[in-house]
Image 1 (cartoon, rainbow, N blue to C red):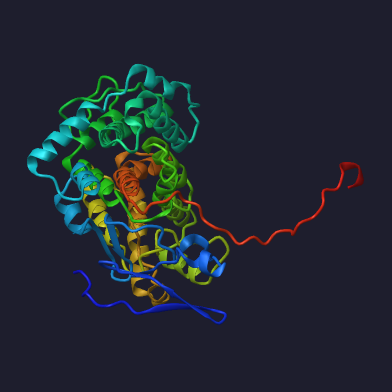
Image 2 (cartoon, rainbow, N blue to C red; image 1 turned 135 degrees about the vertical axis):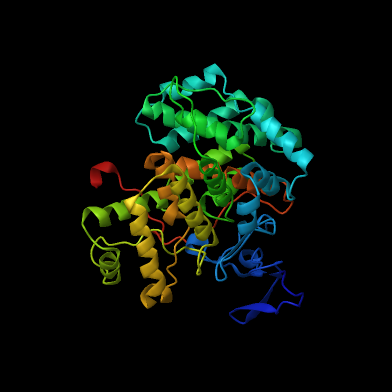
Length: 434
């Protein structure tokens, strides 16, 4: 429910004997803002906010998060409803266009994406020249950058038709690229997309089908994969999304901007959390610890004991995506007949955390990463592919945010300020005298 309309309080900044009035900016929901655009010119001062914890770099209509209440909405729609009723491509349309599509619009959109999933043979050569041991995110970033060379007609950020083409091309070719990265590392031949299959069906078949065999999995497999992509589709101004916007603010094309987002996501503090959860669960198993014993070590801050998959930079309540992932985890493991001992450990860890005042008082609730890795592992993905899967899901959000920034008349090229605290002016000393 939107906030009630009311006047914002007057804000003034006292600088010496001068009171500087600051403009306030109202939000539909969430935090209102204070505009600081005149701060430097009127006071000679800049704001210092490491990590941008208190700084809004833009106004956006795409995603709303209330971390205290555990709320996530895309374009106003609760993530719980979208995860239950929607599909990934429908959510992509919503993020990109602002409204849910009609049946006719969705059908045409799906057909257009399906048509462009194919990669030309010379493009496919990219995967053969990349080192087999290259990090999947390095290959993914390189492949997306190469799209700028293959589709020059889609580069102009000020041409709506070019932007729309680039958007479809990225959505269509990303699952093919990610599947080829997996198959190249596994030493398997690359497969072509098959027209008429759904987005996730095509992706899963291109990833896992073996020569001479038919790829068959239960419907719960596809539903879980589609749901995970939906849950990762956007998450407001996180590190990679902010990177996409910052690079795009220089009028870099969408391929270069998205590739920069891939680079940001590759960092373990951003995209590697679900793999870290699996490593933690494996540590508990391999060291013959009970979940309760491990949690006691965490509480006592024993060396090397870190609780992964709990807590979130934004959410101070139960991550709304986590409950959905847990439900999908149960469904897909049951459908696949997988008995995963790590899942049993994870469930007990969650039970301990949700009943222990130590974790409750610190708002350490399970986040979206806690069960995600278990699902991906059950599906057959190795940990090295978890972050590319994250990128596949986040792609619509990156593109929606980039498009919003490009069309925002208030947008400026990103150029953060700094507070310099290095040496003052000093004279060069010749090499012989040093």
